[in-house]
Image (cartoon, rainbow, N blue to C red; front, side):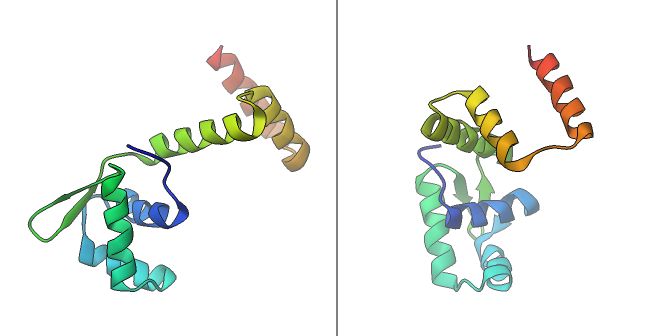
Length: 119
């Protein structure tokens, strides 16, 4: 995939991640109901996702298939955030997160296990 997905593009991707390959007209119907987009807006955003390599279009009926998973996008977004805001330091990211959010004892135990497994 080429480039970052913007919020509007993520809304289209959310539909595809939930539904799997979906006709463009059905994506339009879903997003009209969720966020009030019109047909032209939805088709424009689908086209942008295609240009970035996030969606593949096929026939019949303008079938849209996601080419990236939610996990791949989440990983990329997280890496970009850590690079941009924390100089690439996961430690600074976690420190900031813990200072601002806090965690429960159970969450702390689960995180400790994840850190141990990641070593």
